[in-house]
Image (cartoon, rainbow, N blue to C red; front, side, top):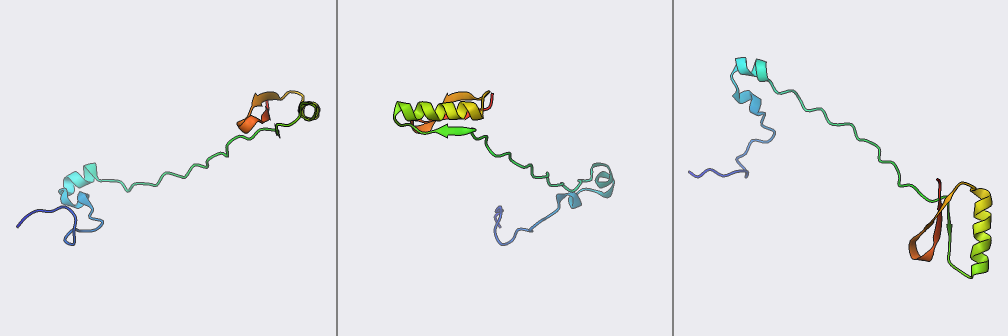
Length: 88
């Protein structure tokens, strides 16, 4: 007879603490594992405004509008040639 791990002869959900003598079970008894509460993942931050590339006059006009709407925002280079306004 050969020993194999797994397969049809295994005992599902076998509690190994039952193998311990009663005295040791009282001292070192395994406590049921409590599932950790699922933490909520915060959504990734988004910019206040995204200004698309275009003719410089149009971009400057949109930047002025964004400045009046968000006076303390910081301007960062965004993806694909855009400009992003982020809170400072």
